[in-house]
Image 1 (cartoon, rainbow, N blue to C red):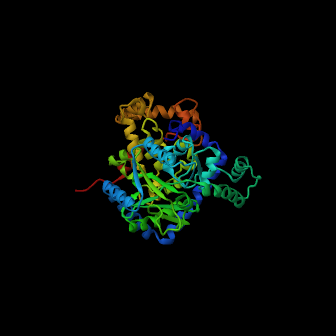
Image 2 (tube, helix red, strand yellow):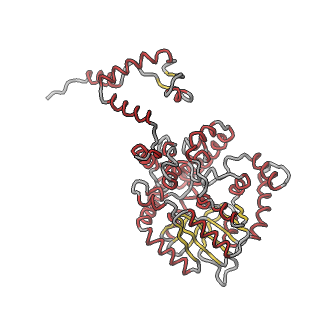
Image 3 (cartoon, helix red, strand yellow):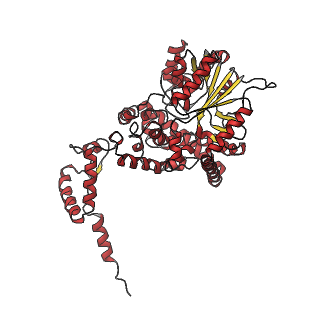
Length: 484
């Protein structure tokens, strides 16, 4: 499995907030993608959009309720088409399957289309240890591979890089003249990768969807690299999570309307590639072998939890990232693993363990914008609250989200709020204690913890002269008495 650094979220997010270049990049991408998404929704009318969302959600609900049936049907259809399907219960098993296929076929060079699951598994490192040269061929993925980094966004993996940084990277790694002209840089990457496409023994892709009735792997791309990876090498391995299966091609049509609009604001991506088995006798191109690796790696835990199951509805469009105020401030790397943003804050703690990622459910303002943007209407705030509850109630010390001091403070607060007279007295003392710090109705700085942590970055509202209860009682006293 890929390296996990989720325990460092707070420190990483503080570093990210202090990076002005990252902040500018996040603002541009968020406004660009989400703005285009909104324009496209308005074009088809909100009523039609809502109907598509409801239909897609029903398809996902139905498929996951009958996942065993559709996975079995998918296996049958893949086999009938001349391919082979493999099941992997975890990252180690998935990596072992791919590495064994590569070794047994004498693979020396592998080209990869974009695959978040392969990032999740740390597949590149495993193949490299087996003596295989691995090349990411999506331009964004290629850039971060050259930089030795991980994706920072589900759709735009190199969004945190400026064109000047990319120019420096290409010049250093490929030995080309320094230029920040975008078309020239794209041509440099294209020329470098074209040779690898021609030499490749193995093409690896992810899958946006798997169609059970036909055994078809479907990928949505805006670059021709996806089709070169799936058709030029002598072997193609598709690797994806078990939740990507849908029943039929008719169902695929629904998601073809939703995914591009939600991800990049396009009506349709440049390429929609459907792969069904290896090359047949009358085909002009295609692989001699086709293998499909279905990965669990913790997804069955999501499936078994009725409170979290709908996280598996996700189609990885990235819309929740583009609208999330937390992601827009800290970027993807702060989340410490493959899946950032609101959806990552839900699935990562389940896939890697609550104790390993206990900060992530709190990486949200619970504003609900992610739920509104999600094309499948996934209720992310509800699931984040559920995970917070599990962390608060966990008997496992490693999973506890609060310190003993925070727990004591919470119990003290609950006791105070249940005793009106004691609350009134405490409020009076608080009004007196705050007087040296109040400026224009706010408290800009408190020198002592724990409130000093709050006032480092924001003002604290001052306690008002009258409490809500006082105002409520006064307003009630003004109402006329009821007449029988």
